[in-house]
Length: 198
Length: 329
Image: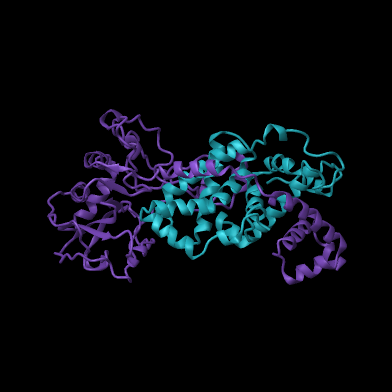
């Protein structure tokens, strides 16, 4: 489901690289960042909503990883720790900018044609950023971690320190919001949830 | 089956369909979904949404990636001169020293213990992951997306906040003031406060949210906090040894302590911590000397030690805190 091979999501190689990086091995650190760069960027891109903010957020996330690698204690998978750090760094960067995710200008158009089914347009890939930007952070983050990275509910629960049941609920509600936004159909069954607060 | 559905709210149905889509539904739930065409329709609707979110993002070019990684790696700690390390050491807030003094009162000897690990080829050196019997600072792997409600009150991090005049500090002091306390919390927007009510404190750490440091001299590199996220890198082993001793002096009150002179490569008879034998850890920090990773441990002890130059045995899990112990805990 995720867009990036699970083979890069952890394992013994990560452990060894982390240990070396913690001991100051620059080459190991470079390899570690290079290995996970795509995931880091993907998280930031989906949370930020546009390329420019995603690049800035990714840079901050990478710097944070470098600065904090000594604090990774090995009690969890490196990727679990990394996702936490990256998600926080990205959200912090967006907050510092005092903004919600802002889609690229080309995406700032009506989300979808009325009565258009979800995922039925070439502009879907553009629309998704605009739609995600309107989904509260509490729902957006677990949806991105689940759908973009392919993490399980248990993994997401661990990373966000919430119960798996809460993850399940938030993902569901986040997707419903997205379905409503993307369909652009006021009669969409999803409208039954539009009164919900995050 | 329809009876089973009958008691479900629309949100329940969405949740069921969503969990099924992710393979997270129970067997019973899955059977329910598979037997109900309306639930199947919901699954397909949410699948379309999921596929959109899961669509691959356009990645930056390799050049941009390489540049970003290189820039991030530049944030590793630079080499620090002994003088700059000393100046930073003096920025330890008074309240921290008061706490440390209480520990010193029960100790007779201060020991600077230094454990040296080779960067390559030392299997034991890799066993440095935390085993924090000492109070730990806020860790970087704390949950993402947090609300501040469970966070302790922040301690002043800058020298100014600690009651010192900014004018008395060196240019790097504001950026490197010591703190063994929890970091300040960022205020969250209302949406986060509501939507993430279950999430605990933020992923900040000492040094992240301190006041903007004063500009430094052009030839002076930025120095990582003494309790911070990167090891100190000393120019020479002698500098490191001198600094380690000064840490013991600075943190010991009263200062009538005896320092072992030969501290270049010392292990405290194996395991670095013997709390039941009268050793008290004052401080620990990482350093790099001649490209060798070093863990410096500053102890107070009520007895002599026979110091040997060994790596710790495998059964010893070293603290990896490189931070000062908060004795108030």
